[in-house]
Every structure is written in structure tokens, then in C-alpha cells.
Image (cartoon, rainbow, N blue to C red):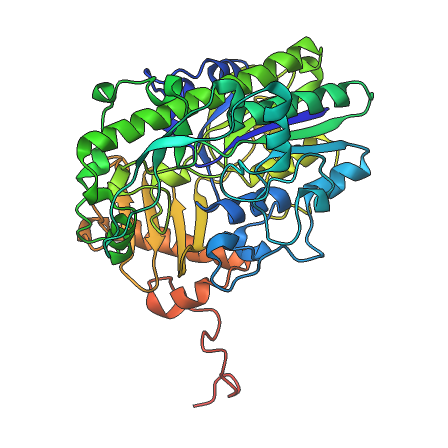
Length: 488
């Protein structure tokens, strides 16, 4: 079984037609969803690039692989996976797979994709590396103009300086964009693999639609801002919320940007999604032309979501809202009937799925479950809740989350905890952690989170033992009792 893995960065699930957006043109991903399995509750294990991508590579939760921060903002965590860490490409190589990765790597500082056996240009960072020699050669070979932008959109930071660049016009034709370049290189790799008779795993990791949104006019102006419906959570007041969220809003300069510019930013983000959809269409079309579709499983997902003004925020950060934790997830396995699944699944589950499809042992991917039975229409026993975690960006900030069918609980040790009723408050505006009518829900979710963290071996639970209602103790939380049991 060949494996084609398509991945975007910082991609809101509600920008895809197949997930219900009637305005954004995503015909190629919609077609993939219509011929495969669309997971409606697909989540990232952590809403930040490097830890999420390391979880995909290893099949381990971030607390276990310990690559907890993007290296550009690293605050003292590990900068690379440990030398002995299990990774799925090593297992596939033992099965004689050709391994390719075209696009964003962003899994560590010193070891790149080639260190794990992948073919492809070395593109390590968080943004489109428009100064990369291979991209420059691509432009020169085709007589295409170099990267140049104008009309930057940015706000003002609390100290009066210009804020992060959010968007700008790109003065290049679509053929010169980094997205078109990545799709072209992926197609070239696909053509090479097709001639060998050996199975392949080929990943294409787009850098977008991560901000800044740098697009040619045709995509920058593709959508009318007046047609943009602002996120309901733009009404966020941060009342009863962890103060860090208000700080992040100031850092991302939301309140210094006019609301009509926010509409334009969302419209430009939509244009970015359409641009990437077109490039994915080029890859899928070439897969069909090469006669490989019947022997190739196709994945599409993202590392995490994006706020684009939701909760008066941009980018991502220490706020475990659906906007950045729920992501698109589509898998097409040849012979499996199209369907939509409602189970809670994770980006980390892709690891065991890849291993399963390649005929490898899935057990080393210890925090991952193969999705193959779900894609093939089976109904195995499946957990009714989902866990996620966060460890910091710019500064350490530990969080743990559990969500089930109706509610979400977030534990913030240095601040207020959060509890959301997702049925009555789908936009997560009202923190109901202290509301007495939800005390039974709070108690149930807190105890369940505690149990699951202990089962995983995530030592975050030690903070919870003395601080929250987790039931009767079955161990000494101080780890310092030397008296024999029963001694007065």
C-alpha cells in the first residue's frame, strides 16, 4: 500500500466546503472527502507546530516525546527528539518503503527530515523559506519573478511597536508561489517513485495557511470581506477566563486593528485555503494519471487550527478552544466506502494508521490507535472522550484538556480552570467551572482526566491530586511518607 500524506499548517476546519463552509472554494479536498472518510471530530494533541508534528512522527503524546516547543520560541525544553525515539519512517524503511517529505519539517533544531530517511529539499522552519536555494532555482528555471510583497497588514503591540505581520500582497503569479513550488516538487517525487515498483510514503507539508497570509492578487482579493461572517466569539470579554488570554490578544494586536480589516484578514485566509486546495488538486490529479490511486491511501489533515479573530485572537496559544484544537481529518483507503465518522480521533492516531497500512507493528506508537477499522466501516470499541495538552510558547504554560460529547474541562494550574457546555455554548464564551449546576459534570470530568493522565504516566496528575476533587487517594501524594502503614 502506497501512502500519500497531505498536510497544512494552522488550518481552520470551518474553511472547507466538506466541513460546511458554503463560501470557500475547496473542490479538491471536498472530492477527497466525498470518496473517503471524513472525521468530524479530529483533533490535534497540542495546538503548536513542533510538538504536534513530533507526535505524528512518533505516535507519542507530547509529554512523552518531550519536544514541547517550537525552536524559534524555545524556553528551555528539548530541541530534538531523543536519539532512541521510535519514529514511523524507520519502521517503513524496514519494509522497503521509499520515503519522501516535501515541505515544512519543523520537528527539531539539529536533525532534519533527511535524518529520519526522507527524500526532499530541506525546509526546516515555520515560514515559507523564500530564500531557499532550491526555490530560487525553481524560479530561475521557469523565468518566474522573485518573492516581493506590499500592503502589509499588522497591528500595534502594547509597547507601541509594529505587531507581527498578518498578511500582505504577493507580487508573483500563482506558478511562482511557494505553494505551487511545493506541489510541483511533490509531483516530481511521485513520478520518480512510480517507476521503481517499490511502495512509497510521500508527504507534502504546506506552510500555509499559517500567517502571514502572503498571496497574489487573485487570491488576496478572491473573497469579498463584506460576505465574511465574523466569528461569534469575537464578542469575547475574557471575563472569568485565564488572564493569559487577554495578554495574548494584546500581543496579537487584535484591538488595534479595525473590524473591517479583521474581515479582510479572514477573507484573505480563505483565499490562502483555496490556493492550497488547488495545489493539492494538482497532486491528486497526477496520482490518478500515474495509475496509482487504486494502490494508494491518501491522508489530509493539519497540525493545528488558527484563531483568525475568534476570541479576539490570532495565531494559536495557551487557550484550548475548538478553533485551534479541532482540525480537518480525511483518509481515503482504496476499497473503503465513503462515510463520515463521529468518534474522537487525533492527529497522533495517524501514526498507527500509517504503520497498519504498511504492515508494520503499531505497538511502538504507544499513544496512537489505528484508524483503519473506522475507515473500513467497522465499529470497534472507542473512547468517548479526548485528551489534549499544552506546554508553552514564548513562556512555559502547562495545560491539560478533556472533552466529551457535551463538555470540555481545562486545567490551568497557575490560573482559573475552565469548563464549557458545548451544547449551550458552542463558541466557548462562558466559563462555567464555578457554576453549581455543573458541579456533577466538573467532578466527573476532573476524575476522568485524572485517571487517564495516571494511566498514561503524565505526571501532571500530581498537581491535581491535592488540588482538585479526584476521589479517594490510593497513594501518598507527598512521596515522603516513611512511617510504616498504620503508625500513629
